[in-house]
Length: 461
Ligand SMILES: Cc1cc2nc3c(=O)[nH]c(=O)nc-3n(C[C@H](O)[C@H](O)[C@H](O)COP(=O)(O)OP(=O)(O)OC[C@H]3O[C@@H](n4cnc5c(N)ncnc54)[C@H](O)[C@@H]3O)c2cc1C
Image (cartoon, rainbow, N blue to C red; front, side):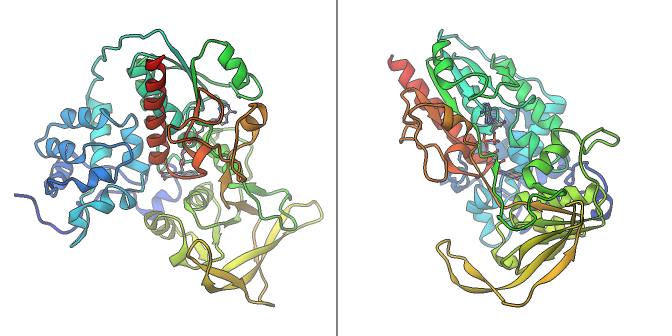
């Protein structure tokens, strides 16, 4: 008989006023007792709606049943069969829109804490378990993967398990993509990502870092090296800007640059010599998850006042509710219904403030959200010494500009057919490079589908 408690077993977390001064993980994870208790809330439904909500098809009720019995390693094997990055997904997936969004327990209370349980199982395995040796039979075929983000790593892992010799070409000096350069340490510790990447290496995946494809090698040159198929998982790392006066001033960052300096260049480590401005007051422009990460990082770096400036209202914010809640708890101040009109500077062209105009919501636009409209004459100034633009990203043009015949949409996203193949024969693509900025799990799902399609093609050959 399931435990019918209507709410999820609470996960311990650091106190807001403590955690907003450090980069340690906010959520501390379940203990074994908490995990067993939460697992007992699962009804083990026959029609398994949660599985249909998971883009990588984790057999959720099966792993939860094993957690309930205390067989945590057994649960890990179930998850691992279809998800190569469980500790990552358990932490950052928007479960409320996916598996948990479909959970029957959510109808009359809170869904089962599937993400929390996945995280517990993956962490338990990392701390107590051992990877089972996988018997891989090499098939003599070589596949190249461009980009070591969730899409590329998943594609690489699946192909390696099928016996392919896989080489991943990664532009940065570290594998992980946004998982290491974008998502901050307090939401996803780098050591967790590194451990998952190490597991992939044990499958024989060869990761070559500092390889900017389009500069060091082109797609044609990779083909000439004997790779029989190529998967492009190069993400969407090109930031967008507003085009307003003063946006190129000293002290204006894109969220990507700001977060890369903190994460990959280790500004989050005390005393690390990273070129980043320690600011007193900062305005983060945008209302998505990336804006929340940038704001919360700025606070942790010591900013006294952190404002999130968003042109619509709280209801319309695309950021996850949980992230907004955490940000508010950490004393981030939200300025809803206002939009920047110019960045103000001093005689040295350094940021001194941001001028905004108040907005009101009109009729719904093409996205279905109510259109923000200016209230003429309502301009006001917020005094800040830095501005972080977090307005979305698009795919970097480097690969498309150097790969002959690679068709893209007007927004620069790579066009693929139903088998994930691009307009170049034998070259596949997936993740943010195809969809535009999306989620970790959707990128992983794309990497999986591409691996299956590549295998189908190369098996035929
Ligand atoms: C700050 C931030 C927070 C986020 N938070 C969440 C979250 O909480 N939950 C969630 O689900 N999603 C989140 N996302 C979105 C999610 O991280 C992405 O959708 C996902 O990482 C996309 O995976 P990908 O593999 O397609 O691309 P990426 O993760 O961008 O990886 C692409 C990789 O390709 C490399 N690359 C690019 N160009 C080249 C080249 N020319 N040659 C070689 N390598 C190249 C890049 O260096 C990178 O390592 C967040 C995104 C950001 C920016």
